[in-house]
Length: 340
Ligand SMILES: Cc1cc2nc3c(=O)[nH]c(=O)nc-3n(C[C@H](O)[C@H](O)[C@H](O)COP(=O)(O)O)c2cc1C
Image 1 (cartoon, rainbow, N blue to C red):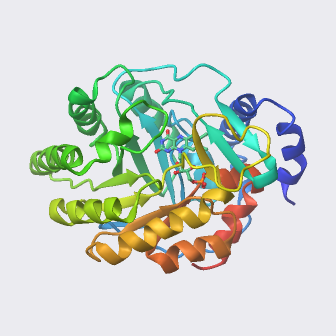
Image 2 (image 1 turned 90 degrees about the horizontal axis):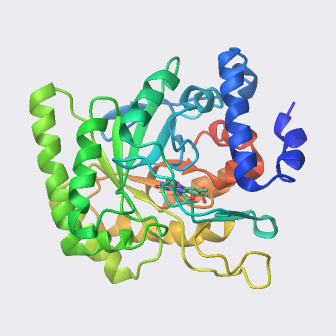
């Protein structure tokens, strides 16, 4: 039985952010009651090694849904092989004023300008330690900078989060592509990105030597780049030998949204209208990048067909967010059973 078919009409009557909190609270309750196995009727799982770590399957939860790291094992119970928590910043912050989350039902899409609302890295790490209990999959910690940190100091914020997250994370995602923190995407400019990534590589090497544990890091990029920008980033990623790229974050474009409610809301657009654009970025990147650097594909995956398109374009793993809001846990099931 697909519970989500019953609950979605009720949830969609609520303000999107209230629906979000209610769903996560429900998920936590199911986990506490040890009833979360209801979410995953007999699923197929095929382990795959990416970034030197073993993922139970190719399907991951994209960053931004479990922003505070409270629900890892609940999402695990849906069948996700990996859960990416965050984005987390060094200090707690409230994010942008509400409303800041909009459903575009006509296009199975979302516009959000949440602005990294999160409890800060110290609290998030406590949440993660608790909520990952019983989860056998991979936990990624997605890091960013605080809103009040000037870009000239951004490296310090990333390094702070990187050091703190390192002992707890299976991998770290470096988010330089959210459109909702002013100036963040400027960190994708090749010279700025080079300094940031070299600093993180150096820190990774140091922490690896000190702890004996190697934690890979992936860089999350925007879909709104011209091909020459993608090529410049691919060159940089080859040079620095980062461990993976996550492609992509939400878009600031509004293709095919004319005439639908909320089309003019500021923020990042996700879901179906983003699917092709992010697949094109993956394909361009795959062509230009060392094959040793894996791509994690995200953007508008709402079916096994869309997930397969990402994998055919070069992605080794996929992540979903908006598709889960519209389709519910049965989407995870569909993707797992498609044996991607
Ligand atoms: C409400 C919302 C919040 C998000 N927050 C984050 C975030 O904090 N960090 C991040 O890297 N990506 C964030 N994302 C982007 C998603 O991780 C994903 O890259 C994007 O939505 C494309 O996938 P989708 O079309 O399956 O949603 C957010 C997306 C949504 C819809």
